[in-house]
Structures are given as C-alpha cells and as structure tokens.
Length: 224
Ligand SMILES: *Cc1c(COP(=O)(O)O)cnc(C)c1O
Image (cartoon, rainbow, N blue to C red):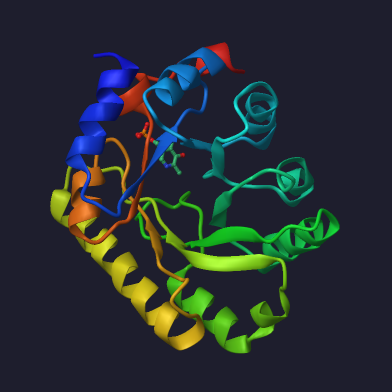
C-alpha cells in the first residue's frame, strides 16, 4: 500500500482525539512529502541531526517531534524549531532544554519518558525515581519547558497481556502525576507503535508513534 493510503487508513481507524505521529526516521524527504500531501503534519524523528536536516528542506508548517534519546550536547540543534520532545529522561537534560529554550525565546512542550518495558536497555525514568524527583520539586523552577505528559515504549514481545499491562500502568501513572504535580495541560499519553498501537489506544493512548506501517521497513544500512 502507498504511504498516502496507509495514512488515510490509520486516520480512519484512530479514535477522535488520538494524534498520529508519523515516524519518518531513516526515510527520505520525498517520503515525508508524500505523507504531507496526504494531510499529515506531525512527524517523529529519533536523531537530532537528521531532524534538523529535514526541517531545513521541508515545509515549515510541519510539527517535528523528537522521540529518540537526546544527548544534552544536541539540544541546541533542535530547540529553535522542535514542537515536542517525547524522550526527556533526566534532570540534566531538562535543564539544558530549559536553558537553550530561554536563549531562543521559546517554551518547549516535553513528555517525561518512563521505562515500562522489561528490556534492560530501555530508556526512561524508573517510575519510582520519577516520583521521587518530582517530590523534590526543583522542576518548578524550569520556566521554558511545559510538562505535557508521559511517553513509553512497551516490551518487544508477542505476549499481548504483558504489553497491555505496561500500557495500563503508564496510563495510571499519567493520571497520578497530573493530579499530584501538574495541571490539565499534562494530558498527553504517548504510547503505541506499529506492532502495538491498538493495545495502546485501548489503554488510553492519545498519541501513537507509527513508522514502519506507514513508510515500510527501515534500511539502517543506508544511514550509517
Ligand atoms: C522507531 C520508533 C517508533 C516507530 O516504530 P515502528 O515500529 O516503525 O512504528 C516509535 N517510537 C519510538 C520511540 C521509536 O524509536
């Protein structure tokens, strides 16, 4: 199926209020333009340099979402234009986003990435550590980031029950953090990818990040 028809099919399948982040990492600008012509405006990338290069050549009404691990020394590359950073996983990273955002007169929407999967390598806050950090309260001094919600990646497994439990736990955590530390703007629940977006939506996701289903398989060999 074409990129355009996949976008249309997904849009029809997603309940109202669920945003589609089209994950275009490794795919060329022409593929993004095909999705753009189908009406897609939100694109997700996981590498700052790649996102900046695409931002430079593509229409300026695209909303760029950074979904991959972000190193502090790459923050300044994307802060001038990024719409949302889904992968905020440390105090240090938040401070650097805040500092760079202040320098360019912006306030950046961020999601707190929470580790929900079982893999050792999974990035994100441990939920207990995140709550302890919020209780400590220093996040309130950050004036140039806007806390919008949480993001998580489920375990890569065929065990659908496990995935469902992980999504439900992240959904509950969002509600708890919103009522204890934030306000009604902390309403984004970013979870679900090609293999598990339906489970994510059933568990309350309102932002799915879908790549291969739209653009086809990624060829990492072309992008060393
Ligand atoms: C690559 C990626 C996705 C999209 O994965 P697909 O399986 O291609 O849909 C979603 N979220 C994150 C964090 C990713 O790195």
